[in-house]
Image (cartoon, rainbow, N blue to C red; front, side):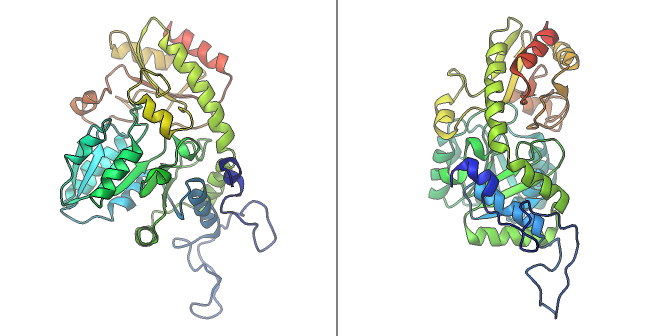
Length: 379
């Protein structure tokens, strides 16, 4: 089954009760048993729910995995991965990553004796210098948030396997439409399904996908024991979102290219970060591991003026100033004061998250309207 067909049919079957084509919303917390332990595979909805299970099967299908797990948020999914660790274990993470992930690592799990090394990963061979006998996980985002840095998944997977370390990839920006990290050697894929997978800015959800049964069993145990699952209504919405992922992503990519090229030619814009430019660091790797270059773009104004950046995001009309990304509507954000405010200024500026950086999530509106909106806002 090819990807476009998988988004609609992958891992799915018609509901056995009445043949419903779409999985029904099983809005129930518990299930009748004929005798203790005598049930139809469902006992309690924290552990299993038919709507969530249909979604988890879809997650596994579109990422070419064997097992999918759905959580109440992307951070709940990352939290579950960190719970594979014990005090004294070490994690190597990219230093350019979502602020919420950084906060979870440094403000929560660091207190439980987990050590985190945040490093630049644009050159994969750099990672090996930081691996010790205590290293258990390499955490990768690619493209990164918000600098759009590209990390070579295949090369990183080879290093991870050589040292018997798990490679986890946050695939939120790319989505499985653009890249499938498990096929490139990763052990685990994470999504904030709130973003492109849901696609309509109407749910909050996280996903994990793996191939290995032993790893899946550990994660299912953590999912059930910690209980950070998503409800059936959100599962239904995410399933519906997945069915149009391929057509939405195609338009996000087309509009993303048009917006990136417009910004790159604008006299008031200093720098545009988008993996589709030949001048973008690791563009060739992006070309090799991604089907296209996505709809996420960051840019800085000339003079790196904080007030100028705020003025632009306030003046935009079609782009909405808001947290999050990946919806059908175009959004803009100011990472330094919004998504990455939890990262100390000194640390975020090392990775390029300066005060004038603006991040765009380019939606699926008419390309001309988006460019005209940027034109009037930048001036």
